[in-house]
Amino acid sequence: MTAYPLRAELDGYLERARDLLGKIDVGAVEATVELFYSVYERGGSVLVIGNGGSACTATHMCEDLATYTIPFSETKRLKVLSLTDNTAMITALGNDLSFDAVFAEQVQTYGAPGDVLVAMSGSGNSPNIIAAVERARGMGMKIVGMTGFEGGKLLELSDVSLHSPSDEMQVAQDGHMVMTHMVIEGLRGKIRAEIAARA
Image (cartoon, rainbow, N blue to C red; front, side, top):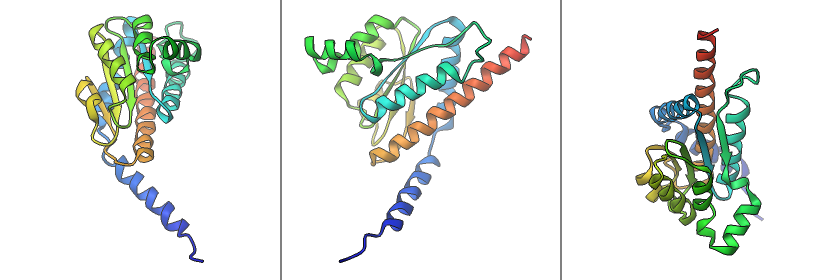
Protein backbone atom coordinates (compact mmCIF):
# COMPACT_ATOMS: atom_id res chain seq x y z
CA MET A 1 0.00 0.00 0.00
CA THR A 2 1.38 3.41 -1.01
CA ALA A 3 1.60 5.90 1.84
CA TYR A 4 -0.38 9.08 1.37
CA PRO A 5 2.00 12.09 1.12
CA LEU A 6 0.18 14.06 3.83
CA ARG A 7 2.99 16.46 4.70
CA ALA A 8 3.60 17.32 1.06
CA GLU A 9 -0.13 17.97 0.59
CA LEU A 10 -0.25 20.28 3.61
CA ASP A 11 2.93 22.12 2.65
CA GLY A 12 1.54 22.57 -0.86
CA TYR A 13 -1.68 24.09 0.43
CA LEU A 14 0.21 26.47 2.70
CA GLU A 15 2.39 27.57 -0.21
CA ARG A 16 -0.67 28.29 -2.38
CA ALA A 17 -2.22 30.29 0.44
CA ARG A 18 0.99 32.28 0.96
CA ASP A 19 1.15 33.01 -2.76
CA LEU A 20 -2.42 34.34 -2.73
CA LEU A 21 -1.83 36.58 0.28
CA GLY A 22 1.02 38.23 -1.60
CA LYS A 23 -1.48 39.24 -4.30
CA ILE A 24 -3.99 41.00 -2.03
CA ASP A 25 -4.85 44.48 -3.32
CA VAL A 26 -4.22 46.58 -0.20
CA GLY A 27 -5.54 49.65 -2.00
CA ALA A 28 -8.92 47.94 -2.44
CA VAL A 29 -8.95 47.02 1.25
CA GLU A 30 -8.19 50.65 2.09
CA ALA A 31 -11.05 51.79 -0.18
CA THR A 32 -13.40 49.40 1.63
CA VAL A 33 -12.37 50.84 5.01
CA GLU A 34 -13.08 54.37 3.73
CA LEU A 35 -16.45 53.27 2.37
CA PHE A 36 -17.43 51.67 5.68
CA TYR A 37 -16.23 54.74 7.57
CA SER A 38 -18.41 57.01 5.45
CA VAL A 39 -21.40 54.79 6.22
CA TYR A 40 -20.54 54.93 9.93
CA GLU A 41 -20.27 58.73 9.85
CA ARG A 42 -23.70 59.24 8.32
CA GLY A 43 -25.47 56.48 10.28
CA GLY A 44 -26.05 54.13 7.35
CA SER A 45 -25.88 50.35 7.19
CA VAL A 46 -23.61 47.62 5.85
CA LEU A 47 -25.40 44.50 4.62
CA VAL A 48 -23.44 41.31 3.92
CA ILE A 49 -24.39 38.22 1.88
CA GLY A 50 -22.82 34.93 0.80
CA ASN A 51 -23.57 31.24 0.27
CA GLY A 52 -22.01 28.26 2.03
CA GLY A 53 -18.57 29.07 3.41
CA SER A 54 -19.08 32.67 2.31
CA ALA A 55 -22.22 32.80 4.46
CA CYS A 56 -20.02 31.97 7.45
CA THR A 57 -17.55 34.68 6.43
CA ALA A 58 -20.47 37.12 6.17
CA THR A 59 -21.53 36.30 9.72
CA HIS A 60 -17.96 36.62 10.96
CA MET A 61 -17.48 39.98 9.24
CA CYS A 62 -20.66 41.39 10.78
CA GLU A 63 -19.78 40.16 14.27
CA ASP A 64 -16.34 41.77 14.09
CA LEU A 65 -17.69 45.02 12.65
CA ALA A 66 -20.29 45.26 15.39
CA THR A 67 -18.19 44.27 18.39
CA TYR A 68 -14.53 44.96 17.63
CA THR A 69 -14.32 48.18 15.65
CA ILE A 70 -16.07 50.57 18.04
CA PRO A 71 -15.62 50.78 21.84
CA PHE A 72 -18.75 49.75 23.73
CA SER A 73 -18.53 53.07 25.61
CA GLU A 74 -19.47 54.82 22.35
CA THR A 75 -23.16 55.43 21.69
CA LYS A 76 -22.62 55.79 17.94
CA ARG A 77 -22.32 52.38 16.30
CA LEU A 78 -21.94 50.96 12.80
CA LYS A 79 -25.16 49.21 11.77
CA VAL A 80 -24.28 45.86 10.19
CA LEU A 81 -26.47 42.93 9.21
CA SER A 82 -25.64 39.52 7.75
CA LEU A 83 -28.60 38.64 5.54
CA THR A 84 -27.44 35.01 5.56
CA ASP A 85 -28.53 34.62 9.20
CA ASN A 86 -32.24 35.39 8.76
CA THR A 87 -33.34 31.75 8.50
CA ALA A 88 -37.09 32.39 8.62
CA MET A 89 -36.99 35.01 5.87
CA ILE A 90 -34.62 32.97 3.70
CA THR A 91 -36.84 29.89 3.87
CA ALA A 92 -40.01 31.91 3.31
CA LEU A 93 -38.59 33.68 0.27
CA GLY A 94 -37.07 30.48 -1.08
CA ASN A 95 -40.40 28.70 -0.73
CA ASP A 96 -42.71 31.50 -1.89
CA LEU A 97 -40.54 32.99 -4.64
CA SER A 98 -37.24 31.24 -5.41
CA PHE A 99 -33.79 30.74 -3.89
CA ASP A 100 -32.53 33.38 -6.32
CA ALA A 101 -34.66 35.95 -4.44
CA VAL A 102 -33.54 35.25 -0.86
CA PHE A 103 -31.05 38.10 -0.69
CA ALA A 104 -32.53 40.58 -3.19
CA GLU A 105 -35.78 40.83 -1.26
CA GLN A 106 -33.92 41.34 2.02
CA VAL A 107 -31.85 44.09 0.41
CA GLN A 108 -35.12 45.75 -0.58
CA THR A 109 -36.32 45.51 3.03
CA TYR A 110 -33.19 46.57 4.89
CA GLY A 111 -31.15 48.63 2.41
CA ALA A 112 -31.24 52.35 1.61
CA PRO A 113 -29.46 54.70 -0.80
CA GLY A 114 -25.85 55.21 0.24
CA ASP A 115 -25.68 51.97 2.22
CA VAL A 116 -23.12 49.29 1.35
CA LEU A 117 -23.75 45.72 0.27
CA VAL A 118 -20.83 43.33 0.71
CA ALA A 119 -21.43 40.44 -1.69
CA MET A 120 -19.31 37.29 -1.42
CA SER A 121 -19.15 34.71 -4.18
CA GLY A 122 -16.19 32.51 -5.07
CA SER A 123 -17.26 32.17 -8.68
CA GLY A 124 -18.73 35.66 -8.85
CA ASN A 125 -21.73 34.22 -10.66
CA SER A 126 -24.09 32.92 -7.93
CA PRO A 127 -27.58 33.86 -9.17
CA ASN A 128 -28.91 34.93 -5.77
CA ILE A 129 -25.84 37.11 -5.15
CA ILE A 130 -26.05 38.77 -8.58
CA ALA A 131 -29.79 39.40 -8.13
CA ALA A 132 -29.13 41.10 -4.78
CA VAL A 133 -26.30 43.19 -6.22
CA GLU A 134 -28.44 44.36 -9.12
CA ARG A 135 -31.25 45.25 -6.72
CA ALA A 136 -28.86 47.14 -4.46
CA ARG A 137 -27.33 49.08 -7.35
CA GLY A 138 -30.82 50.06 -8.48
CA MET A 139 -31.48 51.41 -4.97
CA GLY A 140 -28.35 53.58 -4.99
CA MET A 141 -26.26 51.35 -2.74
CA LYS A 142 -22.51 50.77 -3.10
CA ILE A 143 -21.17 47.27 -3.76
CA VAL A 144 -18.07 45.65 -2.28
CA GLY A 145 -17.55 42.37 -4.15
CA MET A 146 -15.49 39.54 -2.69
CA THR A 147 -14.66 37.06 -5.46
CA GLY A 148 -12.31 34.26 -6.44
CA PHE A 149 -11.40 32.52 -9.71
CA GLU A 150 -11.83 35.06 -12.56
CA GLY A 151 -14.28 37.19 -10.57
CA GLY A 152 -17.32 36.51 -12.75
CA LYS A 153 -20.16 38.99 -13.13
CA LEU A 154 -19.78 40.22 -9.55
CA LEU A 155 -16.34 41.63 -10.35
CA GLU A 156 -17.89 43.78 -13.09
CA LEU A 157 -20.75 45.00 -10.87
CA SER A 158 -18.63 45.97 -7.85
CA ASP A 159 -17.66 49.51 -6.89
CA VAL A 160 -14.77 48.04 -4.87
CA SER A 161 -13.38 44.57 -5.57
CA LEU A 162 -11.73 42.42 -2.89
CA HIS A 163 -10.60 39.74 -5.30
CA SER A 164 -8.82 36.50 -4.39
CA PRO A 165 -7.13 35.43 -7.65
CA SER A 166 -7.20 31.69 -7.02
CA ASP A 167 -8.87 28.84 -8.88
CA GLU A 168 -9.15 26.90 -5.63
CA MET A 169 -12.23 27.76 -3.58
CA GLN A 170 -10.70 27.14 -0.15
CA VAL A 171 -7.65 29.27 -0.91
CA ALA A 172 -9.86 32.04 -2.33
CA GLN A 173 -11.92 31.97 0.86
CA ASP A 174 -8.73 32.14 2.93
CA GLY A 175 -7.97 35.38 1.12
CA HIS A 176 -11.47 36.68 1.86
CA MET A 177 -11.05 35.98 5.56
CA VAL A 178 -7.70 37.76 5.68
CA MET A 179 -9.08 40.76 3.80
CA THR A 180 -12.07 40.81 6.15
CA HIS A 181 -9.73 41.05 9.13
CA MET A 182 -7.67 43.73 7.38
CA VAL A 183 -10.82 45.79 6.88
CA ILE A 184 -11.79 45.32 10.52
CA GLU A 185 -8.32 46.33 11.71
CA GLY A 186 -8.20 49.40 9.47
CA LEU A 187 -11.70 50.57 10.39
CA ARG A 188 -11.02 50.03 14.10
CA GLY A 189 -7.89 52.17 13.92
CA LYS A 190 -9.59 54.93 11.93
CA ILE A 191 -12.60 55.14 14.24
CA ARG A 192 -10.53 55.07 17.41
CA ALA A 193 -8.26 57.80 16.05
CA GLU A 194 -11.34 59.93 15.40
CA ILE A 195 -12.61 59.30 18.94
CA ALA A 196 -9.22 60.20 20.42
CA ALA A 197 -9.07 63.41 18.36
CA ARG A 198 -12.30 64.72 19.83
CA ALA A 199 -11.53 63.63 23.40
